[in-house]
Length: 141
Image (tube, rainbow, N blue to C red; front, top):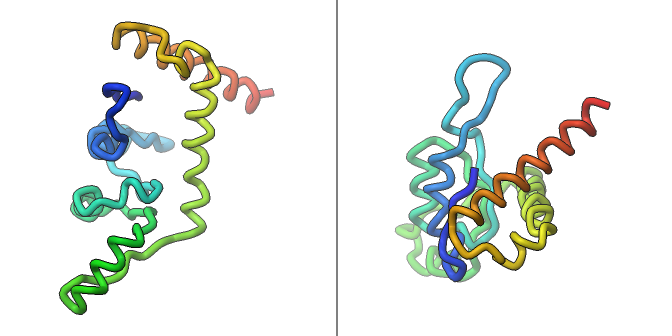
């Protein structure tokens, strides 16, 4: 599942649209639309993203930016509680970073060689399928 934006667009505004597309498969039944936890780097620590996760009862594994923590402390008791952070789960975040690097190993994706969004998205999907098949064959042999 991919969400395309313009090349100069930031990642953080796409946090909620991407989460709305997430489907967590279980051993039986339909896929869940709510993961247990979501890990992200400090770029995703906005109040909007955290409120969305809280509303959906999803654990946020996102460290707080220093300026956000300072503003919260400056407000005193009205600033709210400090953000909890699960360092063990946060280590799992690099799985996504490694996947992005594997996608970009394909020259057409890394250079954005395709001119239309449709052909770029098709390239992303093809590369994603190639990675999935390669990983699937590694685990079955």
